[in-house]
Image (tube, rainbow, N blue to C red; front, top):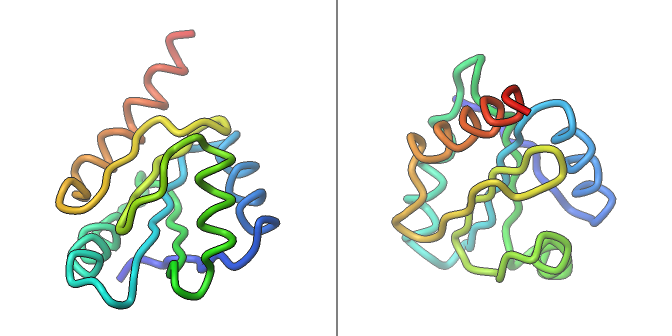
Length: 119
């Protein structure tokens, strides 16, 4: 199963943003009270190939201030569940609810790298 690093603080998220300068990263916000979140998490953890982005996550009920910080920092309005692909400090893709799929996240990460190599 894929390794997901749990985020707790804004400093943790800064580490994610810094890592995104080197390669795409994926962040998932979930809720412990939502079955759709469980489905989103199932899709998220399918990103376990070597070429897939590193995975980070948080449970909104345990990290509401961090969830708000991520929304403010990225400019992406909070939803749960919500997946973000971040590259070079910018959100290059986001999806929520049933739109979270491993394929979409993987494709977004690959497109981001491909687009940067054209610059």
